[in-house]
Image (cartoon, chains in turn green, blue, brown, purple):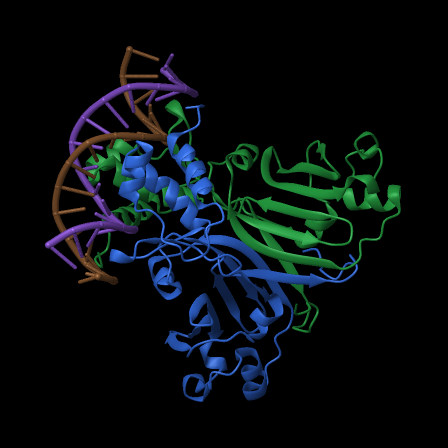
Length: 215
Length: 215
DNA sequence: CAGTGGTCTAGACCACTCT
DNA sequence: GAGTGGTCTAGACCACTGG
């Protein structure tokens, strides 16, 4: 079908309807929109789903219904803060399987989860970690407590879809696209999954010079 | 519904079925799977859609059907290459609206489009750009031809969904999640949209020191 | 209880591509 | 022509939430 799909026309109309509505405004129910647009609810939902993924709409359950997402919710999170673990976070979960020690913590902003950091370490290299770890920034803790040197850091960045488990932690629906930042050095293998509708990853560079190294 | 949705069960079975199938293997048609799993085609499609978004399956049109996506297709693209415009690219499209000059080029890898770079400039600052531009790396061209200094570079990174237009350029379906890298300096405002199933954004850093600056 | 979003079905038509 | 994926419909049931 090379013509414009109806769901995309619906999306355009919904965007128009969204206009400059202030955040948290109730949005018309799906059935009502389907009726008004003369389309099936399925088609309307397909259009609305994209708006939800784009962070324009927020769906609630039951009588809560759908509301307009507040704008300017997006926060710039620096890469350094991410790696150095400076972001606010909740209690970390530590578990060991074989010789792999996994530390998982939920990055929060206000009262909302915005990301999940998962770090894997060599368990035998860090005896008594689970008991000793005090929830302070992980890299600093490791450096101070175990005298490690991290070595070169390989960093990369991509997108992924949330697994049901991650979706629960991040309070989003399964298969929501997220920003995935991973790094690897001599000591740790880490991955941070970020809600792109809440945080952007900020990289700051001076004067166009080669401060980033080509890989 | 706190139980596991059927489409998610289907996805698990499809993942199992995918197993270690080599790339480009034909995948069973949707109707056949629906029949085999005792589910409707809609449900199967929902499961398959996620696998497509995750880059595990590739859909063709007509008799081509669905095939298993080849693995290790992902290429590491350095941020420097992106900004300095070192990546292979096709002919750039230049257009002017008002005082805004927009340069758009498709990043290719092999014969596949992997990204779209769109740069906005102040048109009056670059007289005769459209005629003079020779498709060489943009920043170098501007520096050499117009003697500009770019100043500090503000960079950030997030995810987005492809518009129908971008989807056409990237040869993906509309609303596919992509990696979006933007930067801003005294001269240009640029945005690169990358197919995350083809390229990852590589950031290389030495020795865990503060080479990235917190914003 | 009424209304919401989430899921699921069975069927339909279309554009496209291979044989 | 046969079979594929892409879209769309009309209807159904469920879990959940608010008045």
